[in-house]
Structure formats: C-alpha cells, structure tokens
Amino acid sequence: MLFLFSCSTERPTGKTEAEVLFKEANSLIEDGRFLLATEKLNSLRSQYPYSYYATHAELLQADILFKQESYEEAASAYILFKDFHPKYKKMSYVIWKIAESFFQQVPDTHDRDLTPAHESIKYYQELLRLYRKTKFSKDALERIKFCKGMIRDKEQYIADFYYKTDVFDAARYRYLAMLKRFRSPVLRDHSMIRVVLSSANLGEAERCKAYYKKYLSKISASSKAELVDAFGSCTNN
Image 1 (cartoon, rainbow, N blue to C red):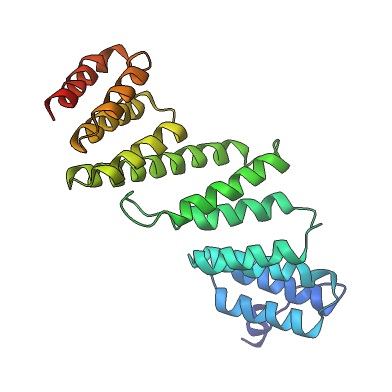
Image 2 (cartoon, rainbow, N blue to C red):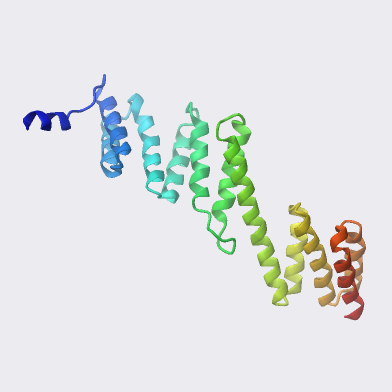
C-alpha cells in the first residue's frame, strides 16, 4: 500500500522546480482538474516570475479558461498575454484563440447583440494578415464568412423592422447603407426595392424617381418587375 501511495503522488522530473510545476499543471489539465492546475500555475508565476516557464504559464491559464468555456474571461486573458508578450514565438496561436474566444460568444440568432461577431472578425482578419499560411487560415476564413452572414442578416432585420413599423426614413437609411456595404444579389435587390418604396411612402416623389432610374439598370432581371411596381407607388402617393 505504501508503494502504491508513493507511486500515485510521485511528481514529474525537471531541471527546476518551475519546470516540475509546469509539468504538473499540464498533467492536471489533461485530467480535467482545472482548479488544481491553476493553483500550480499561480505558484509557478509567484515563486518563479523570471523563469522560462512563467510566460508559458500565463498562456496556459488562458487556455484553462477557454477549456472551462469561460470565453469572455479567456478573451481578456489572451489579449493581455498578446499585449505583454508581442514577440512570443507562437503569436499566431494566441491571436487564433482570441478570435475563437469571441466566436464562441456569438449568439445563435442574428436578432441579438453581435458585438462578439465583430470582434472575432477583427482578430481573424489580423491573423490572416500577419500569418496567412498558418494552419488556422482555412477555419478563420470560414468563421469570417459565417460572422459576416450573421451581421448581414441583422442589418436586414433592423431595416425590415423599421419598414414594417412605418419608420420609412430610418428604413431607407438602413437599406442605402446595406447597398454600400454588402454584395449579396438577393439582399441588394431587396434593398433597392425598399429604398424606392420608402421614398414613395415618405411622399418624396422626385427622390423616388431618382432612385428608380439609378437602380433600374443594376437590379437583377428576376426582380425588375417588382422594382417597376414599387415605382408605381411614387405616382400614386
């Protein structure tokens, strides 16, 4: 029994106590014992702040927060690490984890706060700009596309809400902004038609006609008839 007990409490080997603490923390993380791992890392950083492993301990603590699904805290920890260690050799990983921490906070539906989507795009784009050939590039591009789709749907949701509630000036402003910002053919057709209709409902016949003439050559053939019908509202109002 004494032999078994001694084996179960045997510590890993290392050239320094800092290395031993770091290895112990890694082992605890693998076992899912995050609180004990954090205690080991805190001891390492407080007792050996100038050790080679102290910097790695900081990053590992951020990883623990991520594994615990504390994504808001994880993002802050990774950003802090990035700011204090700008020359860290695996900075691509750090930026990736910042972006991932925000991505995990993106809501399931576009009608909620999409600040995390904007933040994740920012860091994914930074990653691609600085480390284009990193192994994270493909996933970063896919996540950017997903987040942009959420943002696009949110903008249409807001514009449509204004239109349906007869706040036509705000609706037109939103639709015009979407025409400048997005390239989706379906969304652009929808926005052009709604700009004309909003102008008609505001009683601005001249602007209604001007928008109609501007969009007639730009709208897709499948939506042209709907634009013509919308223009009919200009003369009726």
